[in-house]
Amino acid sequence: MNINNKKIVITGAASGIGKSILEHLLQHSNVEIVATDLNAIPSELPDNVHLHQGDMASPTGIENLFDFALEKMGHIDLFIANAGFAYYEKTQQEDWAHINNIYQCNTFSPIYCSHKMARLNMGREYGVLITASFMGIYSLPGYSLYSSTKAALISWSDAYRREKNDQGHIMLLCPVATKTQFFNTNAPVPWPTQTSQQVALAAIKGIQKNHYKIFPSKLSILTLALNWVFPLVMPIYKAIETHKFKQWLSKRSVET
Image 1: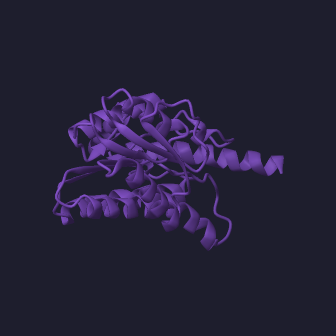
Image 2: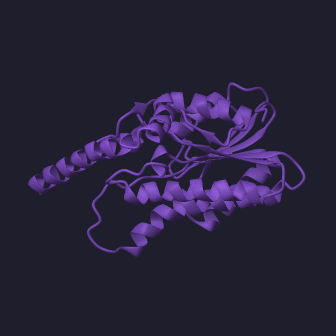
Image 3: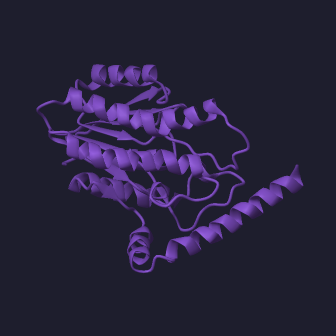
């Protein structure tokens, strides 16, 4: 879809991939944007950006965002569901709230927003870009819950886009590990990595071409092809990441 002259909402816009996508969107003409995040967004932005702060992990927070966006812009052409977070952990015991927290934000929220966009835009073209992850295709140790939230999005979107009968474009952004605050922890960062600017550029190009799945890293595309021909590629890679995970656990046990 053409980004020029569009009314756009982007979540998780204060930093990382969301901030970079916002910067690229502002290079297009006559766009009007509502940028939201759980944290405050720096205010040195042009007048065509309306700042909003809220929690995308609850129906109330989502409804407040839509009310705000519709009041400011009248309608929404493109919704970018970028808000999300990860756990890097070894599961020690059952914890319903722990599981629910990440699913509310990473999975339930984008699905809910997609359904709402469909209802609000009956009879007209619209787009929904959801930040998923390459780990939704190939999960890694330490990221079991995070990977599952993204895998659920990929599975849901594949069926949903075939079910619906409208002019909406459901697009999934599937980056590898990105050099942002998202991975600013003591946990090992999976290889390969990319910058948020690379992801944002791929996202913009994907939106313009209505691509269903967007892979910012060429290595991820190569991995999919190689693993199809040589099925041992991913098991070997996962074995390396498992070793890194066990080293991380050993280091933590020594520190505590």
